Image (cartoon, rainbow, N blue to C red; front, side, top):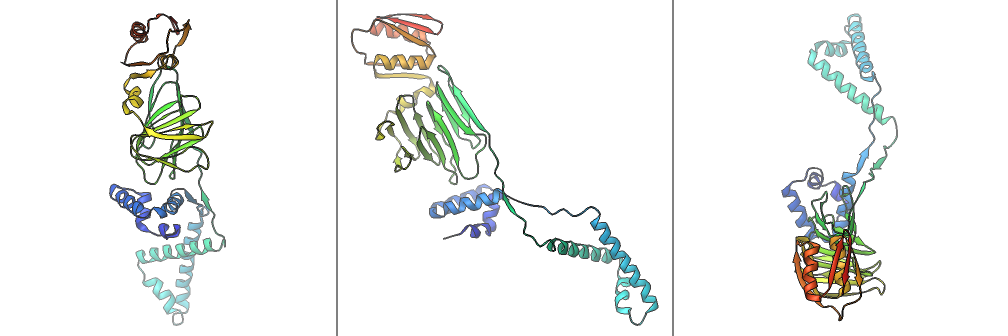
Length: 348
């Protein structure tokens, strides 16, 4: 089992973290798939490489000049004394006098470096390693009833927000994980990153992916649904619960109050049609129709009297105005309607 020290001493790992390229990404992606148990240690090593700063020792102003002058002074003294003690000091001043200008400068620089190193060592202290923890700003996007919005995150993940929804995410993800929180209905196309799982937190439920597309809906009171289109996700309905893995075409419906869930197949077109401007009703009751119309168009619908029988409406509309939709529905369900700004009345 590799330790973080093993990774930190690996030149190829360091190069991958500091200067990644496609070849290195491919190599380490395959390595992680073959050694999944090493992933937590690898992430820690990567965090250490990208988030460590060392204190810099500043050389005092004029120190280099003082050392240089001292060496030159000592050199002159040796040369002067050599004339007085030619026999005894020949080996000392003779070497200095025979040096050319280049050799003397090199010698001075070498001695300066050595003295500087000794001065640093004389501090007799270990410089602290500081983990840089940067506070990343959180960004919140909201859509009002009748609005839709597309957002692209810093990692390339694309998100579509349905009306009356909320998305919160960091301005920039860190090197270990990618976490966002949502409310309402949101569709994700997650950029693949084997080192940083993508997590969506929704009222205590956590959905984890590496790279996939899925829809999350919390608009039904007390219920959360996650519908997977491509890839693979794990869903934890609540804290401490076992992870549930979904396959493409499967959805999990979680009831918050009862803490129970159900996995089933879903209609992809019906679930994701809102992204293309489709409003689909499938055997919908009156209350379901009213709620969707209010959410879709940002209006408030008032009912005068009640229909003669329960609605089981099935219909599809794309990029239609509220007036056109109500005209169509009124022929089917036999009611009259009035639109006054954001107020709508249905008379049965």
